[in-house]
Amino acid sequence: MKKTGLYFGVVALAAVLTLSACGNNNNGNNSASPSASASPSASAPASSPSASAPAAGGGAVQDVTINASNWKFDVTEIKAKVGDTIKLTLKNTDGVHGIAVEDLGVKVKNGETVEIKLDKAGTFEYHCSIQCGQGHDNMTGLIVVE
Ligand SMILES: [Cu+2]
Image (cartoon, rainbow, N blue to C red; front, top):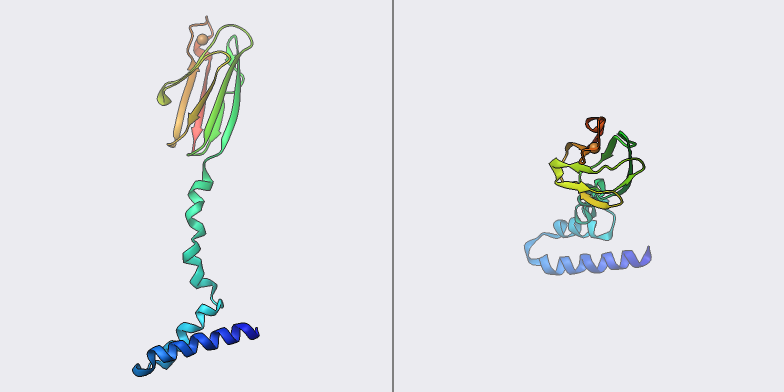
């Protein structure tokens, strides 16, 4: 406390010396007191914690494994946020299937892992990409990006 007071005194003195000819002594005192770290509002805009908020909203990485069988995917809805990345793995447990997400230009084969960067909101359908038999048309799911 003593040192802060001394520092404040020096700053005030400097301000007074600088402004002495203008009769602005009151002004000098007012501007000197916020600099003595007594004003959290003055430092808030400088650090701007809100600037990092949008980046924190997305950017997560989700590992998703879809097991495909005749004739269904065991995962039929994947939820994510804009900015997230999905690492999508396909495993065929029964039959021969693939995954296509046409709106995102993504295709995944059996045993493959594909990274999907989600840079826009929306609902994107995926479906089996291999004509696998009578239940083929039932093999669909959704990626929901908010
Ligand atoms: Cu199929």
